[in-house]
Image 1 (cartoon, rainbow, N blue to C red):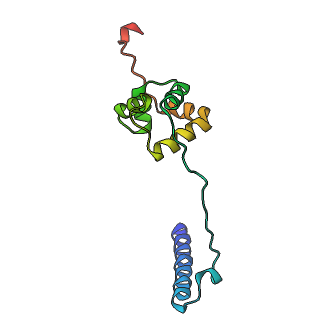
Image 2: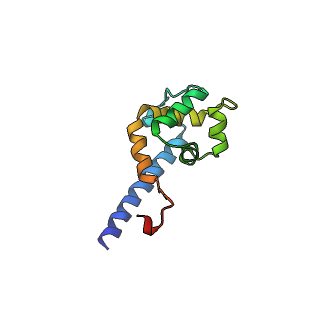
Image 3: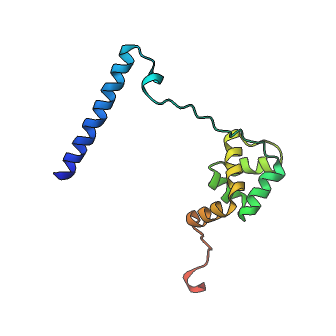
Length: 126
């Protein structure tokens, strides 16, 4: 019951704030005069990755093309074509490659958390 009262109070505050915002819009007063308005621009134009650079990023992570493709969420043929210079990575892929390059240790740790290694050895071999 106590938590429900807190939620109701929070809900009432949100509704009141939205009503004030609606009133501002209806009054014709520029929103910037009543509220803080920020414009944020990110300086994140991705750089192009050449085939050798894609391969270097993968090698730095110490993983195969199939694992790299799964990690990036693309087909293994896509990674292969990037590394062979047949295709160039998309802007989004380049941004991700940049992030990986910028903090290899983070992404190595991330890989350790998501890798499920099946070695093909039977119980008797272990």
